[in-house]
Image (tube, rainbow, N blue to C red; front, top):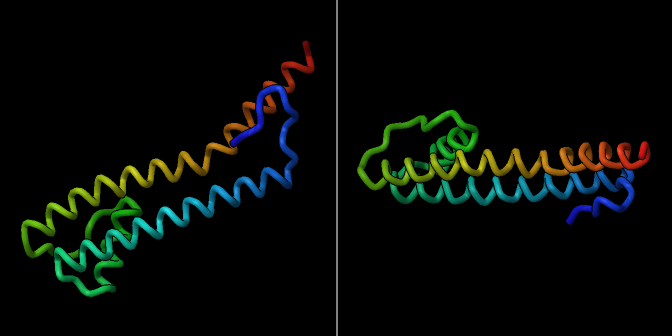
Amino acid sequence: MYEHVSTRVLTFRLFLWRLLRHFGIVVALIVVSLAIGMAGYRGFAGMTWVDAFLNSCMLLGGMGPVGELPNTPSKIFAGVYALYAGLIFVVSVGFLMAPVVHRIFHQLHAEYQDRN
């Protein structure tokens, strides 16, 4: 997916396209995760779509659920979804940072090779 250590550093324009692709993938992952959360809150807790959206967004953002959960299945879903949302947050940040970190390391390696 990324250029090999022996190749030149990617141009800034191509690097921006790579960042945009990564951003698009992260947005798609968040949209799918939001849909899963909304469907779960709607099905298990009987929340309205707006309340399900709010709770899903709050968990994906790392804040926690907002409303009361009426039954045991909804509480189990909320717990599992909270773990999933935390993992999605970490994966999203890592996926967005990967091209930046790779570019920095690639430039440092290229500068080191130029000096030797």
